[in-house]
Image 1 (cartoon, rainbow, N blue to C red):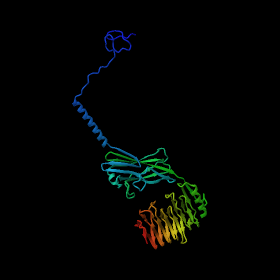
Image 2 (cartoon, rainbow, N blue to C red; image 1 turned 180 degrees about the horizontal axis):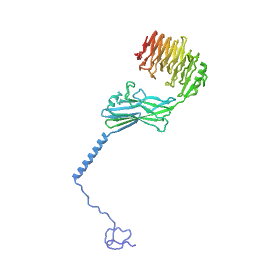
Image 3 (cartoon, rainbow, N blue to C red; image 1 turned 90 degrees about the horizontal axis):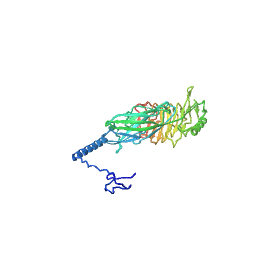
Image 4 (cartoon, rainbow, N blue to C red; image 1 turned 180 degrees about the vertical axis):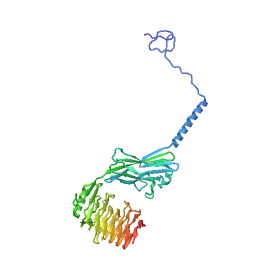
Length: 419
């Protein structure tokens, strides 16, 4: 098809951009319109509105309620300063924990205190008293698998500084081995200024096996048989498992040594005769595990005026036991802790002898003991804590020395009886 000029109708070459006859351009062009002008007053108003909106947005972002979240620790700042808020199960109020590891055996329920600490960030001073005045509400929440056969529970957070110095709040956690693991606990602090602080920590539960032995399923006929069982279990069982041994009402005439793990020994009574040890029990130190606690219940330790009834370099709990006629009835040494409750110490050179230089303790109760006719009822050479040892409801009768407190240990003896 022949290309023609739209203006004069003359024929055009295909590549032409103007007509050779009339010299007019044949390209389509867009002719820009005249520019629009805005009044300067309008521009000033628009700029003012923009600046005001920017300032308002900045102020809103600055003062709007904020949410602070963390696991184990949160840093929070307000007009009064900066705070370290942390949670743990430790007496160290500067040590944040993200996880709590707990073993759970056959008990129906286990319990521990979950602690919340609030420190001034710069000085490390306890800021809980002042800070809690800014808190509108403090709650604890749980995130756990709802399909688990059992669920962890908690008590309402409370200030319990007398029992837990330095803490802001404490909640008691109850759990068992069937609870979901991990289970997350979340502290939620709603501040008076609208801010929210959420602080989480995970509970990791390890189920442990419990073994029960007695005269029906194990040879417990004498010291050698008992020692053989202890040696086998020390090698074959997990260190976290629980071993309960119920002993027959007989006398064990040779020394017995506990090692490699904790053991719980429970005595029996038959025709007025209880399980007895006449050569003592020794618990050897476990350098790789200081938290094991061996328990002794309902056992008589009957000596000949020499030796040690119970000698332990690892933790022990002793209840309803009798110690008679030993040079030293119970010796706690090394860096460990031993509790005696409702026990009888009678006619010993020294009843309870503490010479431990560790830095921890498990329980401060020494209640309900009877100390009679000992040369020295209680000898405290070194004690691994400044916490007060509670001797409530203890009876001290006809001892040469009731308490030889060489290390100046704090003692609770207001409710003890001295005769």
